[in-house]
Length: 254
Image (cartoon, rainbow, N blue to C red; front, side, top):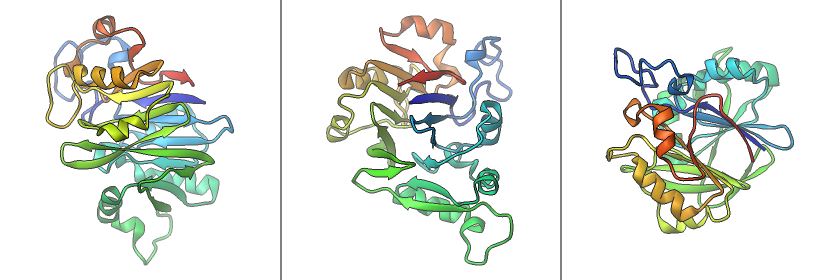
């Protein structure tokens, strides 16, 4: 399998509008971050998307993605679902509804925020999506067995996902021990780390590193990175062996 990081930034992205800090003014492409999302291409050639943020259209065009088989939603904050309207392009090409997997909280939010998509009286040309509830147990998406990992984003229940030897978790600031146990044996772990200072709803760098130490993957990649983390080239030198800052367009073989 291959994992491609489509975006690795926070809800504001990097650079942040009107900010003149050294990170936002950096000429290092690794410091330019779209909103967080990633694409897993399976051995069978199927594409599974983790989150569909407001930069979705740009990300699909940049990576020349010509088919999309499933979307796994971590939670329904706008920086993670704001691109939902643009699935209509894949609807046209693939002649089918898009399969979207999410928990009950996220489903309720999408039905509310995108009511025009899911209304009973369809309007021609609207996006078409089938929402699949993710509960306690593993499920199959695009031919792959997916294990949901429950986490908390302050007081919001969110989901991470494990597929084979990789797992993807973002926007978490707490994961119970029994959920961490589901990550045993992963080769590649993707985990959010917002900044070095503590935050009320996201893992800080030190907190993310502690989770990684407990899971003990072969490789770990940090995502959902804010401009407050610092310059990519400097922060990466501070990280322990096997841990890296992800960056947009990075591709990892699993």
